[in-house]
Image (cartoon, rainbow, N blue to C red; front, top):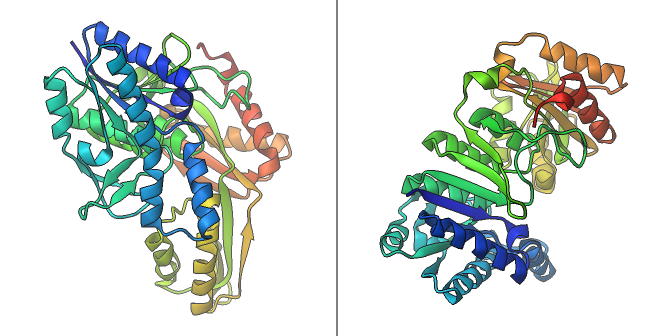
Length: 407
């Protein structure tokens, strides 16, 4: 008998009919002799509906109250599924993040998990109950409701799997696994049978929307095997697990594209120690993630500093940077929104040379100018004009033989 955590996303519980299907799968898993814990998102579109309501009330909703509002979406789905399962004669019980014991910090709307007690879940399992848990939410040390950010139900599921020492965490979504590229952009994309935590982490952070980034970090830290599978079709998905030798045989595992990028350039920055800290300190305090950073070689004791932030955070970042630029007596601040990031990912890059050179050659051949470059051991990212993103992804996918990869 295995202990399996099953997470179902918003599209999987988007209608009552789909909730029936989720119940079918949960019942089948228990019928096969396994213990099962279910983690649910809100119905598809519900979180956006609640956000819209908040912004109709005020242009700048208080984040504590926003968390209180947004946390209601998952309460609906967990109660409905528990009712459905109980109607079938199965002993099921719904639990909020608070009841589960998901304790977070106080960064409202982007809270990070500090610990998971899961005492009531363990009790329920010992009693033969199927726990149905609200994803995306927890509480801070003052018992205020917090939420974990977009895709936070993935993190809830993985964190629970780690706390319960589950045999596997299965993320059911509207796709049947992780692909070498977004199939909507690259028709030749192939499903990947097995992918390393590091590769999945890079893909998630660089635009692949299959798993939330922090959920992959958590899975890697606690060695939780995660399977990505489809709610709507039967079949094998993608296993996210430890790196093995087979993964290193291929230089590039996938191509990602991310349109959620904006570039901020501070022109005429005084070229002296401590300036970078003064610039990025307020950004960090506002919980805005900075990605690529490029500083030009200084001339006449001045330099230009460019960096990228999520486009969704630009409205919050811009006034902070304008204030900092004024304080440090920089000349000006410019913002570019029509950019995108295209990336190659693969643990095989550690043992294969020439990947960057080939990437630059492919983009050059297509007439695509590179604005910024960032590299690590297993990824290469280039910032380009947004209008060229799809062309870049398809060209790179073909050039690195991913069109021919066996599914």
